[in-house]
Length: 384
Ligand SMILES: Cc1ncc(COP(=O)(O)O)c(C=O)c1O
Image (cartoon, rainbow, N blue to C red):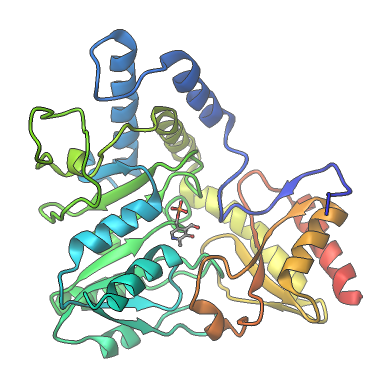
């Protein structure tokens, strides 16, 4: 259905943030239109400028993770790619892996595939009706062969955060590793891999970090090395058929997306000038207001809470979430996501297996008017 209203109220920031700060678009534009060269491959002026952009992006990524050594942050060509790299690189045949029901298919599907092929065994620990996992359940699932825990730090369906410090502590006590999927948390909570205690982390630039494109961060703690998933040109030791030893080139095969790297560096500056906690609190205030008001409408069920990310998932009795999403755009220009949100296992626990949820995710450029438009339209739909 073509939207009947011209206004665009974008509330799908958990899928990808939009709009971006003007500085981010400007940095992207400069790198694309004026630098126009790739990084790590040339010695001419623009190639050196591209190298500097990549260095700036890597330094920014190190700061965003809580002041880690940038030499441990690979700028991957995708969060899903980075998560697959970590999973394939860390597990060995015969290992047992623990994942959570609140995780995203970016980790659940690679694990399912490894298990279906007989390479590993895995256990999915349940979450509660808000999408939260009890660390005790992780402990209960532990086996002698458990090597890895995979956990999404913040649910992309409910915005609820896991107690990753407790999970990493118990994993380490038992000699295991924690792979943290920070796709919905980096840019929402100030990055602090030391406090989280994860061993490996992946996060995309294009969601709450406000970057563009598919560039993602793949971090591993010092001395934790694993095979890259992809082998190819790195611009270094090109005379050798073997992959470089150092973490960064080892996990950065192929040409980097230089404009996206410029955008990431600019987005980090934007966040640092404002403070990630303050920006996220502003987004959360809109989400909490929206959730509270939706919950007062008869026939509307709001999932989750308290939320770390500004995500509000809800259902409207008698309507498929997809129908609600289409009406929201047609009637009020409100753009949300509906369905299962690439999270195969959480819905059984939320009680939303029949069609998933409607998901609104508020970014720093949303306003109270967007909440108003959504709430009013849902009230009309539910009133029927
Ligand atoms: C929790 C979570 N993990 C991983 C991903 C994958 O990110 P990408 O699609 O940028 O590779 C997403 C994207 O929606 C996500 O929400």
